[in-house]
Image (cartoon, rainbow, N blue to C red; front, side):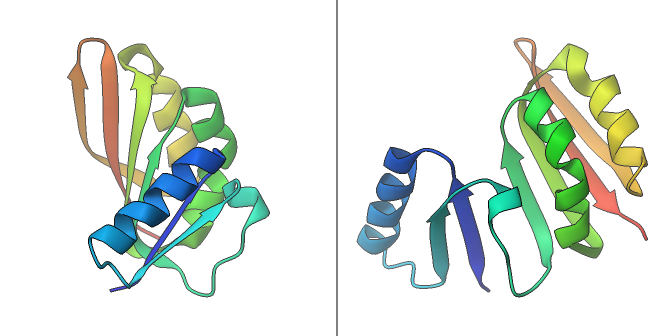
Length: 115
């Protein structure tokens, strides 16, 4: 299994690279940038995105484009009250709701790409 990871924060990228080396994870590639700045050779079965609602809304089309049919998108880093807006955007890209979890006003969504 190959893992692609990225973050806009330089320290997070450096720290992630150090962690992959310490844990001997040779199949993880970590880069700095936004999804709109990066390209990937293949699509993915699973995409995890942990960031605020506004960025998730802007990047939803790209997540859907890089997700294989039947693949899962896990979103987190937003408030429970943001779920309706995120679901409305997700449905535009055939991303179906599988599950949502909330804790202390924070939320996470699990979506599946059906088409």
